[in-house]
Length: 428
Image (tube, rainbow, N blue to C red; front, side, top):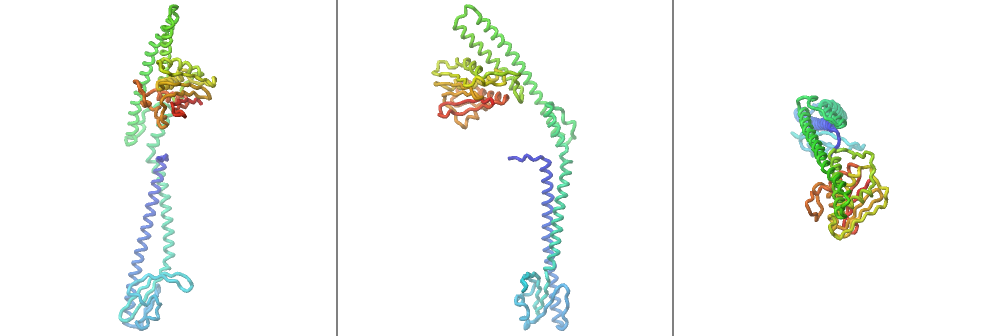
């Protein structure tokens, strides 16, 4: 999952971590270099001193030099047994020795040994006296690391504000435009840099998008106007013909079918216009539509699709009070697609439409659907298995968009017995 932190926050944290890490790395390197250099210097100095001591003792055994920082011992090959046991077999050189004294304290020291001319010299340098200095240095270095880390954080705050100021201003202007709903040119407010180029690109994209939307609106308005005119002529002519006294029953039924078809076309145009406006919420204009009545009208308009198939269409209204605050045309288009699909895919059996409990369900005895394909059927261009004819797979996609516009929940699922499918619209 991608991070939702603000860009400035991530920049500040990155800068602070970089400063802290770099300071810590420098401190560790400095401590290691200091320890190695100190060890080398002490070792070299002790070796030089013990060599000098050995030479002086060999030259004049009565004159034993005195040292303040180190302690010196001189034995011969015959008296070496007087030296501490762990010293007696040490070779010439500088040795790091750690031992525990009788009081239980651990001592760490460097011991320089020189064997020459039957004389064995020892110089001991107490390393523990440097431990306090090392601790103080370590505390100072840790304090410096945290100080530089804090300085990096403060510097990151200041730099992020300066560096991201154009980006923040661009984001604020885009946010304001989104609230107002009207875009203004962005490029004049920014310098000729990367952010200015981004603002210029957004202006060009906004201009193209606005022109495209405007063309679509004009096209939708023109198409709806041009289609409403012939539909109105068809509806008025059909109404006049139905009033003819010498009209036969067969012709009357055909005229009713024409009237229903023209009404469905008008409702479909209204629904598509609602979707083309891209509104967040569908307009209601104070209309209250009875679901059961619209379902009955849709069923009657879809009966000619049965075409002699052994298929029964049933309407069961369990609750006549089920209604929605939406135009009847919107609900009619949604139900026409659901009921029409059920009739098309069901070769025999029943298509049952149930209204009640704040919902409407269309239950068929067709081939059914797979549970994993239920949600995919609402995508544009997706058709069910065994679909015939020249359909484009847009019906259920239109139903989903209409339901989302009015806050309804539409779903598909297989029947419990596996024979057929259930389409459901929940209104609450």
